[in-house]
Length: 394
Image (cartoon, rainbow, N blue to C red):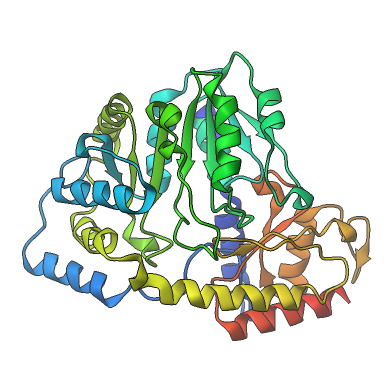
């Protein structure tokens, strides 16, 4: 007899990980699948970061680390926030975690009570709603479309707020859409939030450096919102360090202290060697990783040009991250190669089974008309994948 908790039974499986698993299954059967489903840079971790890790191994950094991170790493993160984000944090406001996902989970667990509402401008990263569910809160979606460049308006935000609203999660540059909110847009949304002092703001800035020209702006740099904003970041995306598992927050003291307490009972301190390597990463000038951003920019042009030749695929121009989020609703109701496409999930499964290209349904991100395609892949994989998609849809 299965006696699993309601908690785990109410939790959806991560759609991105599920799609990657399906693609792996096909690969194991000998099918040549091109994976454009995972948000993972295909670069190796830069040499200067690897050298710092090797040095840490040789210097015998092998004991338990402090729950909230090494003191010198927290100092380096404070410097990074000052340099890149114009935000002043003290080391006591920083908590280093096993990835930004744990950082977000900590924040939700310490702030949310059963029945609280969490506002999610959609599309949003798949795990936001799942983590809110784990914290027994209710996700409230604020929809957007490709026609608004996947941005919400201050009027939409105001309309979504209720007495139960406790938290809003912003993510810019956005996963899955690549959209970036400008400083002016964030300030306009901030004006609405200023009127509601009981709402906290989680700003997920993990893609800040993967940016094609729109200056990155942090909500915590708005003085009126500083005391209730939690800034989340990490080294996975910009530094090609996904497997190193280091994320961090800058937050009001009392929230940081609570996250430290939560983490102390669940994982304790993050990996000691990865933390030493992260000091090298966050202390380095951003120019040291510019070569990756330049390469992503080339791929972005390539994938947009190739996709724009396929009839019925509607695109916008993403300003950051390494995803395109095309609207594919043109194909809904069509029967292709004997398969009826009713929604984005059907469309993504069709591409996997018929074109052998792994993407992710937009339904997982709160937008049922789109699919997410990652261009963190080689140019030849991108060319092959889009030509397979075009052939399958033709």
